[in-house]
Length: 278
Ligand SMILES: [Zn+2]
Image (tube, rainbow, N blue to C red; front, side, top):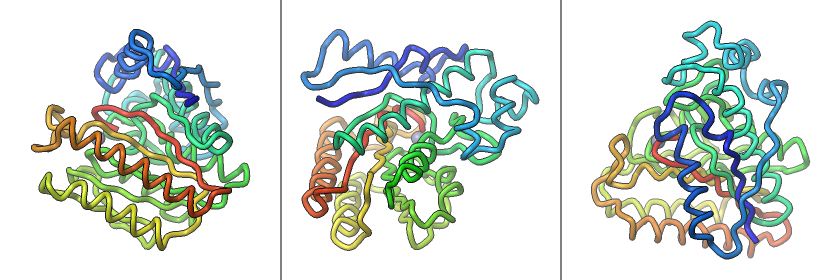
């Protein structure tokens, strides 16, 4: 059984667009057309103190109170009182999935809007960085190294700014847009693919490279952005269709299987279900 974390609170912000609504679409689809071995579970929301382990306390207060308004809306959409419970719950889902994956081998969360968020502000529709919150949570509980695999259409510059000084966190980023680009360090790779035919070989090559030569990852946090799909208005990549994405999904899964077979006692994978922009 694969547990996927979701709460109706993931969608309780007043500002309605893909990032604040798509988790419900996925959850409704799962309820109408259940997938065997997949169950939805409500996560425990994070506390302000837990979020402040990664983000500046003044920024956390701004998201809670709405003041100052520029900071509270720095991720790019209007603040309203529903934003605070939404991001505590949604980021709590990412943390809960990471913990579950360490115990059970795999888990997921329908969290959205994570990888552009910085220490002191939001960006690119991302309020808090649930990927880094999840990585730090499992490291605090004994994990020794974590891989963040980011296949969102856009670069994960927010994540990089938060982990570049932490030697326990590695980042593999394959993007199709230079938005939020950053200079990789020796624990990070960033590929910005420009031709659809190069996408899958790039992902496969990076997975094989680190699967064979990388450190002993205790957990893989897979940021599964769907915005490279060619129908997406803000990340769409011509030639990236439903069929190749099924192949990407298989490639990523087999990468996780390879990791488990190499280090059967410690490797885990977690899927953070994402959508149009992360
Ligand atoms: Zn994106």
